[in-house]
Image 1 (tube, rainbow, N blue to C red):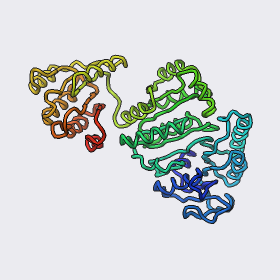
Image 2: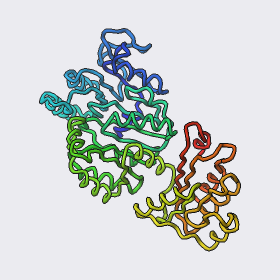
Image 3: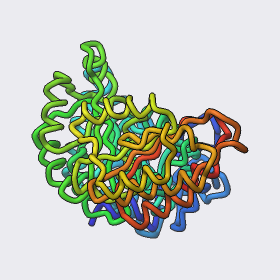
Image 4: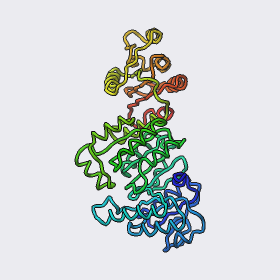
Length: 429
């Protein structure tokens, strides 16, 4: 499959590498060198014999070995000529990082992109881009971007497709901070001949991808996107954040990646109808996608809520109702067990309030396991807020992990803590 040549290449060439750290080409090579990539890396630069310790070739033709993936970091006016050279070399996968195409206000940029698409079709070449930061495949130790720090990410099951490189970098910082595991991250850019539906079809069959996050500004063929989402969600959950709610943001999408956005409410309704889960911002997008990547789907919509403070339990109940979930009615066996475990001045119904037994880790653990094991509960939300010292309040991590492992029920853990508190517990969970 052609997409394997993008995401799992054996030989990569970078055309437009510079020896200056002020240039993007330098950082693309730096990214490849630092990510643990196990394939061969070639660079083309007729002005140098080597760049960052890698032998430089005067031209693509001078490289005797076949190439799986070519990365172009050159002025936009040179891209089409180099694309033809890729065709002669039988390179079928090209990443065009260069900007200056349809995202610009100039007619020249629009014309360049039309010609780029035409030449790609003539040569049988697939392009990711142009006007993109690149892409990353943590499953294949590949960082084909101008951002070396993508290699700091933890490998996980979430794959992200985005029309914005800036949003990917925002998510990068958040994912590193929150220890979120990502798999494949693709900046689609102007989508000259690779669009959302192409990569959704690939990710649908990608065993290392467990859930998919989409950052969407707008597409020219919304029906194709919706059909691809419909086909994919049969096997993997898809979370979408659609930008362009306001008229100004809708207009800005055109100048960003040359996209046609369209009315936000129309998109929102259609995405829901076709099975996508909607996120209200990019950080919620990736947090929701990770939660879905780590567990099996809910068997029903009955949720048990366990909170360290009653107020948060009430907030969670409101959110559950707003989103179509039911607050589970505990079985008689569960109610009996909770009344045995918890003192009379605590809340022993759904939502369960752990406040008065918070300093008893073992007792809290037993309460948590009891709720998980209830046959009337399909999923569990736990909310812990840091209110005391760590000596006073300990997280019952072992009990939570045991309950999840035993019952296989989906769960969400909400931890509201200052920086540096419960970091090890957070990683274990």
